[in-house]
Length: 143
Image (cartoon, rainbow, N blue to C red; front, side, top):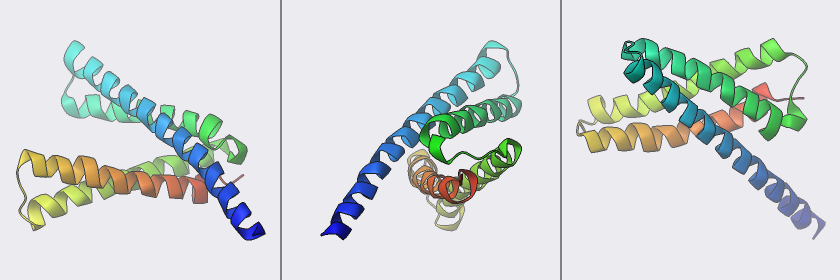
């Protein structure tokens, strides 16, 4: 029975961590959306540059939230290296979402807006988020 208690304790601890991770992700998403629309709509900037800026700002917000809240007990002393790995993992997570969209749209021929949203913003987002969470634990916040 001690094994079951240890497993239950580990799982319970992970639930709190997943909640924090999801909360930080939600805040970063709102920041991404807000910054994008500020630059695109209010300032009339091109959508590509507006998105580049919004993703950069959201990445910093996500890193700070995950570093100081979600994985606070695991943050490292190598701040630049930690942030660099965080950024690389975010790019890979983005590529996972884009790959899901590409496969659905171009390979499988599901070209409707609904299909694109399901593949990119549901399946791709879910797989990318799972990858990010596991990768952050393994390669970024290792302290």
